[in-house]
Length: 171
Image 1: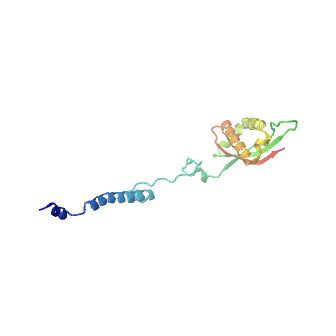
Image 2: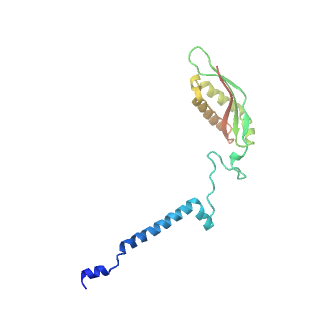
Image 3: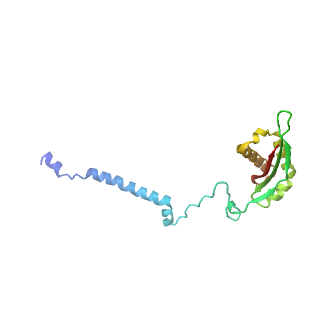
């Protein structure tokens, strides 16, 4: 037998066989990944599907329900009138009427007990503000963030989640 005859006698399936051996595991792995990420495969295997994530800022309560499902609790703050840090001879004043949003009804007692400290922190902060710092929505948002931080510090371990402005007057 010559070399040409032996070459013709060999089957020509070597290259196709390699492609098949590589393609089958890749297709199977892709299908398994698709089933896993759609949640079908964990259900078929009897595994618990991953718990749905709660929206940002909500923590589960003691009874397991998300905090967002609970009604909001608001605590009325007394009116605050303070003079602002204004340049020149003309005085500027701010009148602030607000409510604090809290996570638990029990925190209202802690806020009431900390009321002198809350009023002091709020008034001191407002007296250092300049009228131009309160202009626009960005100034109001900065004020809100600072008051939340001060209220959370003064009334710890109570958690103040928001400050709602009922009335905010600048003169």
